[in-house]
Image 1: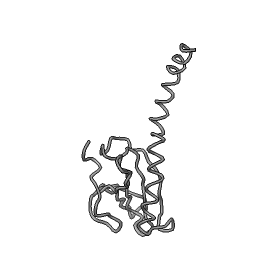
Image 2: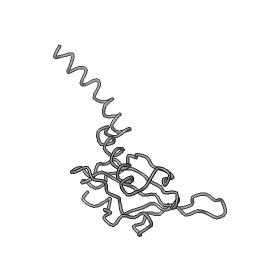
Image 3: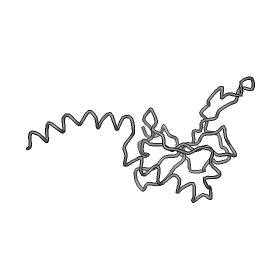
Image 4: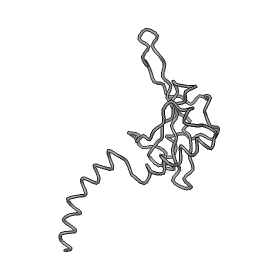
Length: 136
């Protein structure tokens, strides 16, 4: 029985690792998908104010105080600005990253031409935002 359990562990380990690499950690994803919408609602924002909102797993390491998972939000009144939120490891508080992606529209094709990452203050910027590359 002990040998079978060890063999099963070795066989299943690569599948578990591949799952985590492709889908993220289910525990941190749960907290991110739960906390960020509640944070936005506490600020008086509703689903009607949002153009897009969903969980995302970044391709690179971010701030060690924050779970790697992120939550992307675009507002209807600012459709070219993409905000990213995260959840702190300690306390599970939601924070907004100061860096935002801004699309510029190519007038000839009416397609997004460039995505700039900036830290400028915008309409939905929070005063207590954090740098996503700090504390790496």
